[in-house]
Length: 194
Image (cartoon, rainbow, N blue to C red; front, side):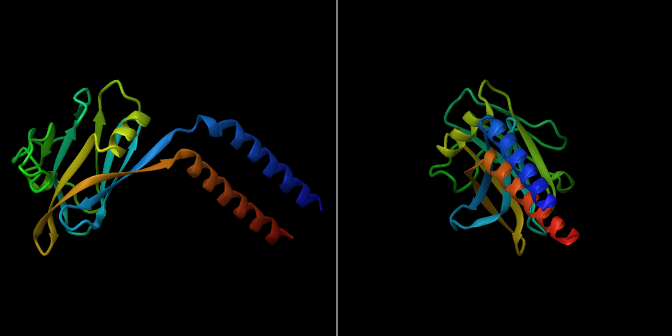
């Protein structure tokens, strides 16, 4: 009985702190990349957090070689501080995204394979502007910011092009799910001790 009371107190304290901090949680974002022309999702995704977009490569043998940023709002700009890139990329537009082709507002190309983003690697771009992360997410969701990626060796040595699609993930849900997982773990531990 004493363990059940202790467990109830812990759950009550967790819910109290959850209610206290939940209103302060903003939005994080998962940025999916969809194949241009095919519509299906690829093995590439990004996260938008603290005005930084990190893009991950989860497809074996593929290399991310070009990144194209299109901004409807010209007050937005993006930087990359790594090595081995040229800006603008060649070509300066992502083929097949717009017809006729539209030059990207900012682009980064990696001509040498050792600098390209391989399987299990990521690259981070930083947005330098007066927008906070929630405002940037809204621009992504409204397609006012679009990011295209050029992938080499996608399937059988063929290249492919992908374009961003934002999915909001409220940080409060992440917090809630982590708390529920912790409570389940704690409950199982208490059962084992009984």
